[in-house]
Each structure stands twice: as structure tokens, then as C-alpha cells.
Image: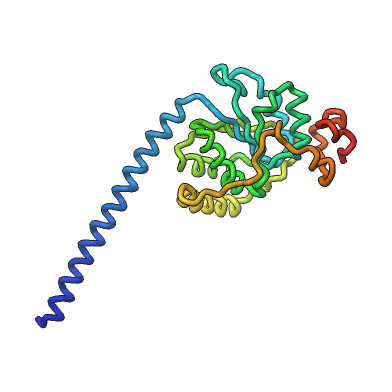
Amino acid sequence: MTGKGVWLARWRRFWRRFWRWAVLAIVSAIAIVGTWRAVSLAAAARAPIDAWLVLGGSIKREMYVAERANERGAGIVGGSPLPILISTGSDPPCLWALFQREGVDLGRIWIEECARSTFENFAYSVPVLVNWQARHVKMTTSGTHYRRAMRMARIAFGMRGIWVEFDTAPEVGVPANSESQLKTVLDVTRTIAWSLVAPLSPIRCGLVANLTQMDWVRWRDSTSFACEAQGQVRPEELPPGLEGLLE
């Protein structure tokens, strides 16, 4: 064998060994991370619920949460009121009216206004909940939306070590979210891809605010709004200065 042939044979042996060790290292890393994540999720599942996420799409979801927010075992766990994050739900004046009507401390209510789809509900909400150091999240959506949202939530939250449980809101009529098998597959695939890169490059929403900190002057001067009829929001229930602006 020529010197060139010997060199090529050694090079091939080197790369075969390199790829064997590389594959072994990757598989081992995945196994270690998977085991650690499973143990972390098991611990999170046993921990008390420490946050409540509401997916927008129907005012009935927000009415349901407002009605239960002061119930022990529902909105109050272990004597502590849960912070509530609403991901692009009803217009803030409507939310103010709903939670004020039920006597809920408005300081518990946070609003994320960036999401425009179920995928974005998780993309924008998960970083907020991670920042809150939440470990066990209750999530409310409609029964018709549950299956797709559940699959996406298990991935989006599970990859961050957060356990999620579901509390579906009763519905009258058909919520805004439409469901199909293709849409579920596409959304789940997109959620898996996003969950892998999110810890390195999280998506941040610049429109996250507490309900007590809303700029009602902006709504009065430049924004029209409407509350779904099922909410039965009366003009006098709206924030001060907005009473006559309900469409």
C-alpha cells in the first residue's frame, strides 16, 4: 500500500471512531437530560399549583376563572392566591370588569397581549411563567380546544421542567379556536422545534402588564373595544373614564 493509501486508511479509521464516540456522547447526553427532566417533572407534579394560565379565545374562560379565583383549592392553593396570566384574551377593559365583578384582587391578574395563535400563547407565556419561577401551572381553555392545547402544553412546559394540569371551562356555542388533525400536527411539530431552541433564544413579549397598571387613557383616546355578549358586561362596570365607550 502506498503512503497515500495508508494515510487514507488511518483517516477513515479515525472518522469511524470519532462518529461512534460522537453518537455515543449524544445518546448519553439525551438520556441524562431526559432522566433529569423526568425527575424534575415528577417533583413539580407533586408541588402545589403556583400559577394559573388562561388561553384566550372565549370570554367564558375568563368568566370561569374569575368566578373561581377566590375559591380555596381552585384560585387559592395552600392559603396563597394564584397569580393569573391571561394570554391574549378579551380586551383589558372587559377583563377589568369581569374580575372586579367577582371581587378578585386585580393585582393578581396579568395580561400578555402578543399572542395571535395557540402556538404563540405558549411561546410568549412560558418565558413569563419561567420568570415567575413557576413549577406547577394550571391551564384553562375550552373543551373543544383541549386536545391540541394539551399536547402543545406538555411539550412547551415539560421542556422547561414545569408540570401543567388542565381545567377546562364550560362553553356555550363554539369558541374562536378551530381544530383539525393537520393543524394539531403542525402546531405540535412547531412547538417541539421551538422548545429545543427557546432556552437559548427565548421569545419575549413587550406587552405584558398587570391589570392594575393598564393605561386606560390609551383605551379612552385611541382604541375602540367590545366585550363578548356572553360576558354581559355593563357600561358602568368598566374602568373609570371608559363607561360610555363600550361597543
